[in-house]
Image 1 (cartoon, rainbow, N blue to C red):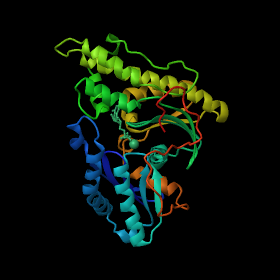
Image 2 (cartoon, rainbow, N blue to C red):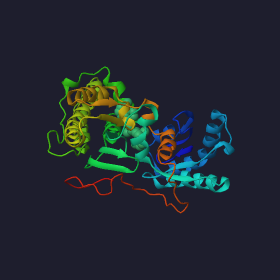
Image 3 (cartoon, rainbow, N blue to C red):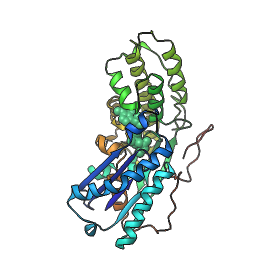
Image 4 (cartoon, rainbow, N blue to C red):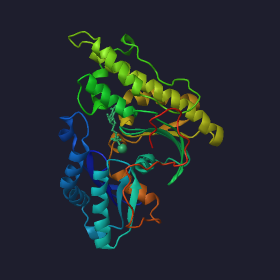
Length: 344
Ligand code: KG4
Ligand code: ZN
């Protein structure tokens, strides 16, 4: 399966076999292009995807040592994401599928993240997924490909967004998550007290926009020499970890009530954070759940997860009339969280 990913700021192509062996996973990052703006600029991203897509696909074929004639199917992220980028990947995949007479798969980017642990470990359905990325923070019961039950989502910012926006406020650069984690390594989280939005609430939803505001207030009050930036970074990381742990604890209790304890999977870019991993490991142990985190390269955006999501339902390809979707919830029937600014 040839997989293509282009929904945010990474142009990626991968070749994956049905048995889960990854022959190639190439990524052309636009990080440097967007760093100057402190975040992803959609129009710039779309052009960069267009520039990179052909060479990334060729690089993946070369790396795998295969040609187009060895491919049995083509999958591309069909949404959700920045629509200009999604269109670029979708058109490339449809063109290859048409020219080669191959089945085409429009993959939900979130499903790519959701099923990614099964590409590297024998995680069985159903499992509980904490999806934490720059665009999403969700808790989902994963019953099988295409079968998701959303327990909770964010009412405002995503967890990764809280890292990115706070890093921007603190002048730590983009992407914010890794920068905060590095700065936090030499900081003391107890020096600065930040709020824990929704901690203890009787649902599984999240809220992070208040944290970013609190960081801005505390940053303005820091010593001029910036000596407390590591403390603030550590305090933010601890607050986000606490919030994720509290909501995951509630979700594990709900999941266990229906299915018994199983596996808690963390996926998405924020899952690469060691402090968050450690915190969730403690929660999972206490709830009798196993914890599964895909390796860091599989947690952040990549095309291997897109190819794998298509492999999981390879008997059911999509029509070439599929239209790219800026929004595409995994569980369209999920109850919205209380409050405003609901995200898919
Ligand atoms: O899944 P991803 O690569 O892209 C999508 O948003 O779909 O996630 C990117 C997000 C960014 O917000 C980035 O700051 C965050 O993941 N991230 C991290 C770390 N590495 C990446 N957040 C906290 N700690 C990290 N080590
Ligand atoms: Zn992603």
